Each structure stands twice: as structure tokens, then as C-alpha cells.
Image 1 (cartoon, rainbow, N blue to C red):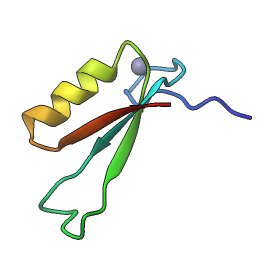
Image 2 (tube, rainbow, N blue to C red; image 1 turned 180 degrees about the vertical axis):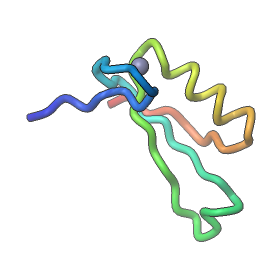
Image 3 (spheres, protein in one colour; image 1 turned 30 degrees about the horizontal axis):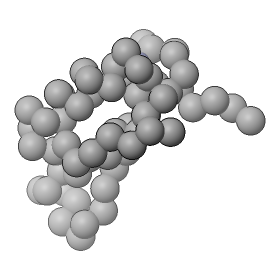
Length: 61
Ligand SMILES: [Zn+2]
């Protein structure tokens, strides 16, 4: 079984969390998108999405 890897560009660390987000202009039907994040990048990805009002939640893997 493959370990999921962090979605951050250039990062090959094992993902420890799922970052759930939605772009209200694109995902008008309530669908959500997810990124995988390692412990180091979960805050970066959350802040990136929060700055754009896309952030929904972080779930542990
Ligand atoms: Zn990472």
C-alpha cells in the first residue's frame, strides 16, 4: 500500500492530514476538493486557501 504524499510542490513527505476546500465560483454544486498535507505544510496550505476564502477544514488521515 502506497503512503499518500504531501500535495505541496516539491515536498515528498508522507501526508498526515487532508485539507478540504472549495472554490465557490467553480464548485457551485457543493462539491469539495482535497489536498494532502504533511505535518510541516498543513498550515501553509490552510493559510493559502483561507486567504482566498476557499478553506473548509482539515481532517487527520
Ligand atoms: Zn509537505
